[in-house]
Image 1 (cartoon, rainbow, N blue to C red):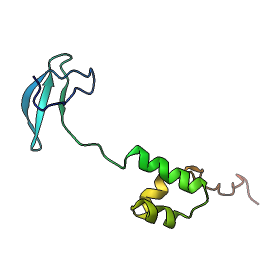
Image 2 (image 1 turned 90 degrees about the vertical axis):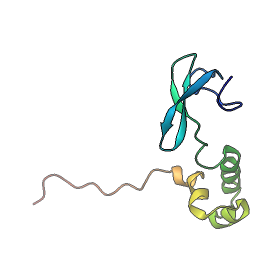
Image 3 (image 1 turned 45 degrees about the vertical axis):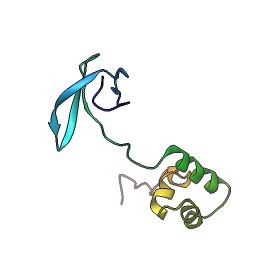
Image 4 (image 1 turned 135 degrees about the horizontal axis):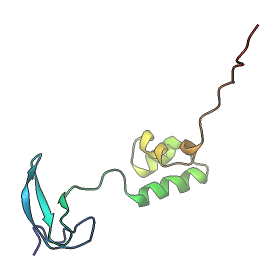
Length: 100
């Protein structure tokens, strides 16, 4: 039986693990299947469905501020998932090597 119900190894997917000390106040686990040491850490960032909704609203022509307001997030997170932020930065004019 695992330490927490449903906690799985990130490498092999096994639920067979034992306690293996603490790291920064969190319980560490040792997978019996592959030997990986891991902690249960919640996922970071926004859910994929929210990011997809931001991209759809952006493509449909809604402004970034309206998109953020509709999704209930601040403007910067809504901008990170949009297609506008994926465009390369503008090129600076190149300088010639030999002047004068």
